[in-house]
Length: 459
Image (cartoon, rainbow, N blue to C red; front, side):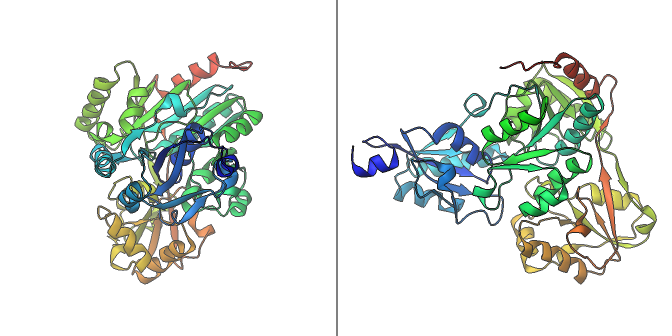
């Protein structure tokens, strides 16, 4: 063994050279689960997509392990071919979510054309086993309503006296070494961690209803921390990814406002085929033909799952403040950007309340937000709540100020006015999950809870 191989902990001889395509989430998890401690593998780099500002940094050596004393570089995805050729990559591993099946194959084609293999890691290799009962909430697309459903389930469990810990799909966009294991139980915790708007949209509503949220980078350690506090684990998924923790009850949402998407996106089709319970979300807003089409598609690929209907009723804190006024709508960011929706609940609520005019923020967008609209040209006359950086948050404020809007309708799950002063009245649009069937999702949760009380099932 050479001095270099002794320092790295790697055996002599060529290791398989791997490039992981990611978006600051599953990519890190898959590395830690499948590659970190395998001396036959050398991960050359991660690539970054979807989220601005997450490339041109390093996965830190204290997380990467002794085989990577300098850490692992994170580079933009557009360098895929260059890396494959210059670094002699053997295998490209796709490790992020909410991609159309065609997009997945475009990535595969780029890797293959550059000489590399192309791979996806599956649940058996990447899921952790918990010693607590686990309910997971997933969806076939971003923006189906996972988070309101997860919060509804968490409230129901607490009313039954269950000590539940929420584990959230990762969003480690900052200092990875400081984000190994994160525990959020107050707004002060969010402030101390410097959470982005997207992170706050997921964590803060759980905290407001008395919950504790765990997230970060190393999900083995995150799971252990959650298990030490709770008798049941609730996985609150991100995008349309499958869970990092093996569920005992897997609840998957589909969206009849986007019929057919349940079979056209990765890994959304995977989670649909894995589901124990399929929730036809937004059934109160979609037409009956679309609901019927989605149900038929679900049954065609997963005939064994229970199918129930759910709704997402929207209400404004103050409808009178909106009626007849010039209204600018701020929507939940990921739902509108890579979720592919032109608008969301805020737009619907503003029109329903009799807004005089919907102000088109695209006409007044600052340069940082113009770049968002250029990257996601499907976005309609709404302002996505992008806030991955201070510059983007200021862009929201400045866009509102430059517009002729008299009032702002904010449909993000958090209080934006706690983060910035908009100079105009802000009316919040709130939406929660509603069980539309009897028996419905609530009955499935209650049955599961009754069957999973008592000592750990996996000692």
